Length: 328
Ligand code: CP
Ligand code: NVA
Image (cartoon, rainbow, N blue to C red; front, side, top):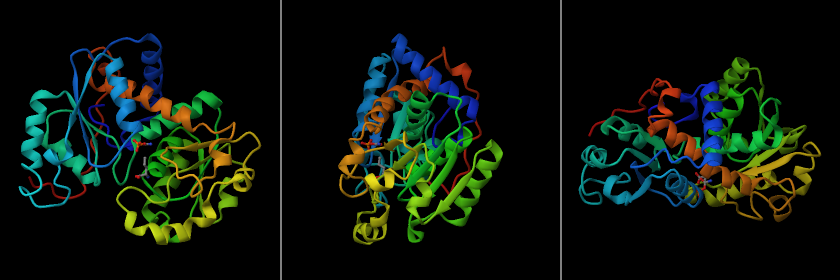
């Protein structure tokens, strides 16, 4: 592993090794990032990803260096008026001082450019398409509750978004079954539906997509939801709230899953919108355990990328195809 932009870059064995390493580092307190500096660049707000990972890096003996997003990212505006220099020049500079960069961006293409322009590992702290660090923490949470062996039915009710995409990739790769319930207007395109189906066939689970929330959660071991309106699409708020209203995870919908089902949400949650208080505060709600695990999996990822001791565990993976031309 030399970057982490998507879950699809990892093989199932690597995913499990990363989780095992994360738990081992959390238990031993081994300081494997001594002298390493990791640049944090966040174009959007963050609580869990930023603070959880900063604490992880501190606990591993490394330093998190906060870089103002405007110094690197023009956010679609013309250089040099809102951004001081090109991303190429900024990445070449950051690569002289930092050992890796942890970036939350609007566009996945920005991460691909960072990877191409810099000479240091790039880790995706969330983009419009993926949230791999969340998915790793979610799988760890699932394994802590159900063990590593049991194959589960995971229902995701809500928006076809970045969190759902990475969750489906990791869950299907580990042989679990995924059932998605959301409105047609905001569902997956044909290509993504085919991709999830292919993963399910390849790894022995199943994939189902429906517009009926009760069908999606039927027989589920886990019910997962996320905000209906992601960062950057606030202009869609009114339309989305209208379409997603039947997909709220409330007691009635949650009780249509298995009796001992767990509830998951990446957070931040909008209580009373995508989830009710009763479900958020339910004894089987694992939302704060997920948040705790955000810190723990950051340890495994940055150790695997940067520590001489653990790097050999992970063979370099093929980098994803670049999605558009990457002029400087
Ligand atoms: N779940 C998550 O990524 O939270 P933040 O946006 O607060 O980082
Ligand atoms: N889907 C949400 C996740 C936030 C952690 C967003 O992109 O805003």
